[in-house]
Amino acid sequence: MAVMDRLRHRSGQPRPEAMTLVEHIAELRRRIIVCVVAFSVFATVAFVFYAEILRFLESPYCRIAHPCDLYVTGPLDGLTIRVKIAGYVGLLLTSPVALWELWRFVTPGLRAGERRYAIAFTVSAVSLFVLGAVLAFYTFPHALGWLQSIGGPTLREIYNPNSYLGLILALMAVFGVTFEFPVVLVALELAGVVSPGTLASWRRWAFFIIVVVAAIITPSGDPFSMTALAIPLYVFYEVSIVIGKVLKRPAREVA
Image 1: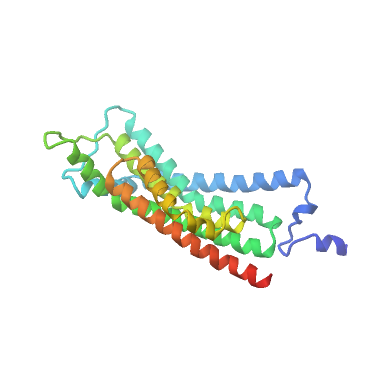
Image 2: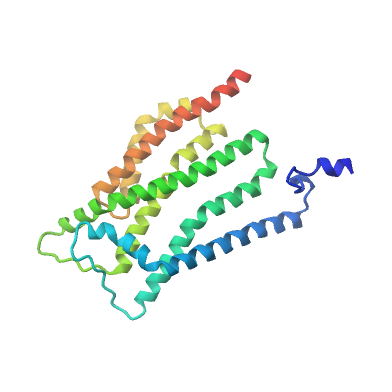
């Protein structure tokens, strides 16, 4: 009996080494179900509050154009757009839940120090994704204004909501995902794949690569968005070097 007690966590769940393959699969299935339920709830809420979300996404366009109407060209476009927005918002709001469930699934097999890093990485990943999406949203009016002006004054814009919403959501997604860059770098430093000193010696190449990648992956292709993406990424690169040195220092002192 004492052996079984030692094989259990404080939460009452069995340790990974005491779980069978079937129990691992059951645990994974339970956490996937939680994510699916969370997505269904958030997507339903987004579907109900579609009008408010649409006005929010239209606001960058409305800052530079009056009127700022979006025009549909098919009878099913309205329903399609509503479902797409509900799906995108549902995925966005579910991402913290998914990361939490992933963390809970992985942490039983981690040491105490690794668990501390895991929750820090989870919070950082969610926060940086939101920060990137917000930056893209507030950069978008400048990008849209540039895209309108580049075609010349004789062109009159009549936007289809599919193309407009697809562009702004893609821009927010790209910014959000690329803002995970420092999390990946710090993880590689902690894993010993790269060292802070190595990253510091790669500064010039890193700056060049970041600028090129920002130019390639920016959906709108405008200079405002590319600059708004490249500058934070390089700042994150430098911050990752500093964080790597700070996190590696205790290990060297203990040794």
